[in-house]
Structure formats: C-alpha cells, structure tokens
Length: 160
Image 1 (cartoon, helix red, strand yellow):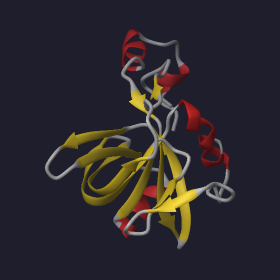
Image 2 (cartoon, one colour):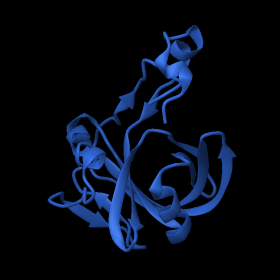
Image 3 (spheres, rainbow, N blue to C red):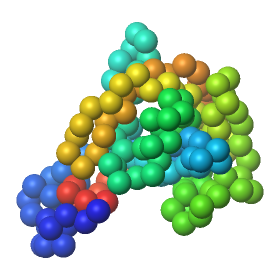
Image 4 (cartoon, rainbow, N blue to C red):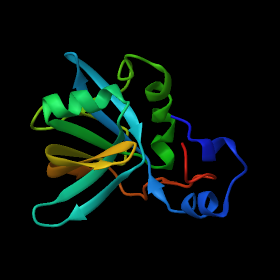
C-alpha cells in the first residue's frame, strides 16, 4: 500500500521516522494448509513474563488471516549471514522450497540458517491504522549461532 506521502518528496517527518531501526525476520505460518511465510520488520519484544512480542502485520496481507486461524507462528531472526534467505519470501508462493528448515514444538517452521528462531502463540491483537498489532507469547526458541541481528533503516518512514 503506497501512501500519498510516499510518492511526494520526503518530508522531515518521513525522514525522521525512517531512522527508527527495525530488525529483519521471516515469519512462518500455515496458509490454506501450506507452509507460507513473509518478510517482517515490525517485530519487537514487549514483555518478559511471560516472554511476549508484538508484530505489526499489514491489514491487506493474506498472512494475517492465517495468523488469526492458526494462532501459532514462527519467527526466524536474520543476520548479515542469513539476509540472502529473504529473497524467496518476496517473490515465491512456496518460499520454503529448497531451504533448510527446522520445526518448533508446536510445528511451526523456522529457517535453520537464520541467527535464531522463536515459536509464538497469538494472545490478542489491536488496530494500528493500516496494520494490525499481533501480540504473542513466545513459547520456544533458540539462538542457532552467535552474532548480531540485521538492523533495517528506511529512507521513508511513511512507506515500505
């Protein structure tokens, strides 16, 4: 979804918001009984007990329907070494084909070559304009190797 501000010259607000760092993640879920996934950057830990994350998902994304139906999802945490794993999730209807994967206790997929993974259960959601905030308890996870996660900055904080 492109907002009018995204097509216009970058405003001071758009430039400032673009400097708010986010990570890069692959979120896995089941879509019509098939393993599916998408590239996410709006994911952040928001609680310790129980461990909780919040993830913003565009209202027009088909994955939102899957998250609501399945109630569990996986998060693969990307780093510089695993950033190349993003490509299939931007252009393929079967993005996990040919990629090494593991499975969490509840059956969610994660990328074996990612920095780490989380398995999450949806607790609630909240409206956030053009996105929905999915609030989820983290039920399992592991760091697969030492390293630092990828950090993503946008030129325009008012659009992708």
